[in-house]
Length: 472
Image (tube, rainbow, N blue to C red; front, side, top):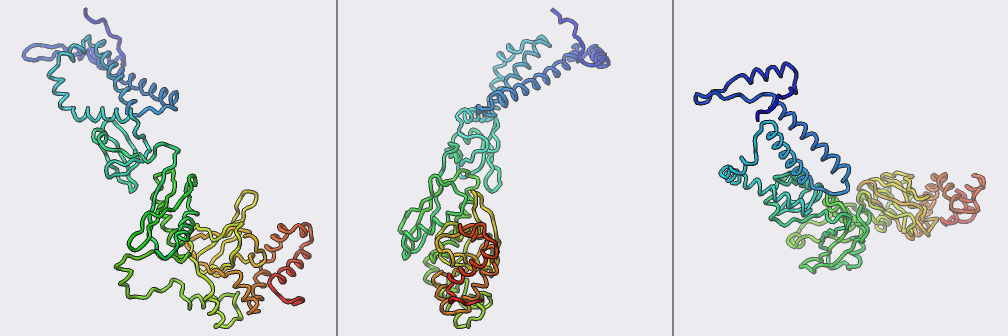
């Protein structure tokens, strides 16, 4: 039966153009063949576009809205949309052109063999991709290792998997190839901590307990996961050093390189501060001819003390002796010099770099000072010997001079000029001391500022060892 009249979908002008084209005849081998009506092709194109739009809309509504909590691989969604579109396209062709497509496909055995051989690798990648998605070995955003490449999964399509390495290169693995490899997923299972290990060789002369404390101190200021806590283990007694293994937990593999670099950065400063030397290789350790020169020499330290207001009035010989009794300590950026609440061990002078002072009150930490070379901090330990009243942290790579408390007290007894200079230091910070004294001392609360200052000055003179009745 001939198909009925078709209703034009385009404008009247396009319909008339289709009727005109339908009157042409195509001559093949001397026989006239009717030209297919143009309006049927327009209908087919319109139906195909509408079907694709509807399928995409359904895909978004179902998988991105209704089933957004269910992890459906993107490759399976693409395959489902493609199959439904192909099925709809076949039905549209049968309806518009009155052609039975299924018998044609069933009887084209030769064509099927040719297509199968031509698409063998493509189909292999397609089914391997389906297998990988069903297995759920990885998903977008996961960090994985395949062969010698470590990267983040950025794309999974019908043919390949795209990895972006930590240095920015894109590595493309065909699905069939990646399905045959061992895949290490650093992001699974989510929420579970993973352990990273870093080794370092340190001298036999230093006790392991001392080394362990120093290595854990280097970890203290890093933004690491604290559950489980970091730990240090001895893994080998090597030829020229003891090999220690530092183990710490992490959540994000993407920043592991930076965390490990920050750890090694802190290790140099911490080990230097603790007097632990990282051994040189044997060919360097025993064949070096040049003498090691310390970063802070005794003449430089003596000159620094001579120019500092705290040591004005002292002889050069006394300053040389003092320079031998103090310690110059290096701190990496963000490392803590002392914490609020720690027992005090001395007062400090910034030799190089910057130091910030923070005070924690009402569960909030506030920075109250930013110190540079020559600035003194921690001097409150001279009048309050129980706990630190603030936290000192290096803002950048910093060297500080630590003056032990007992040593400073001995110096004040031996050198009155130093005691006077320290008293002047406290008087220059009298306003901050008054606020601190009123907060810490119950009997001073509500007293007028003049009385608070008089009591504070008498208290400072007594604590600093001034003779009774002496005025400054």
